[in-house]
Image 1: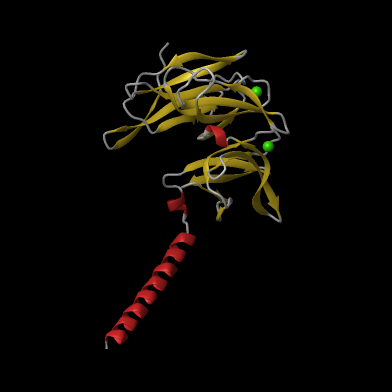
Image 2: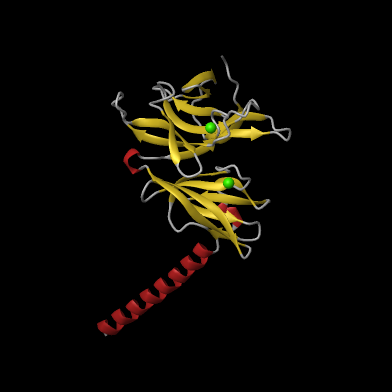
Length: 273
Ligand SMILES: [Ca+2]
Ligand SMILES: [Ca+2]
């Protein structure tokens, strides 16, 4: 009798497991747009005159054509940036893959009206722990710089911390532009590159944290062979990130997202000299 009971139980267990697996597969496959856009990083990509959305969600990269959402990379990534890196009017995607910590440049390819990505370049950053990627022309010479946030010690500074590295894309490869030790004595948390003043030269907008754990935003500008600080903001107790808000006329503002208790707030950063 006991053996029969046990067999029945085992059978039931496997049936439940099968149902659970099917349910998991169904929910896992049908990523809807609401799920995709919750807690994700979204950027617009221009390909052959049309705009698409590139979405980074839980380390996975998706393309939203407006009609269909497709996962476009088989591997997981740490961060991504959509930008026209070679300035030909078509956007590329720069990603850092989680497994090898390589910076990978991807071209968005269209074959038979299907979009896919093709790897055009990769560079190994695994020795220096890359954690974020940004892009923009920091010196205004028409050549795009790629920013890589890394975490390492340097020859002169022993402590391991977040450091700003800039590379220029010469059409074939990335070349060192400025691999700095730091912008200031504060810890670097996040960076955006944006042409805030319409000069053609992109400012570096950095979110930093001081020793007391307070956050502030500073604008740094390229000057010949390095960066100088232009202005800083007031201090914030907490933060969500920095956002560059662009008005219809192209005027840009720096905004900060921060938590006020349980409420997420967003305000324009008032810089003080
Ligand atoms: Ca391009
Ligand atoms: Ca440049």
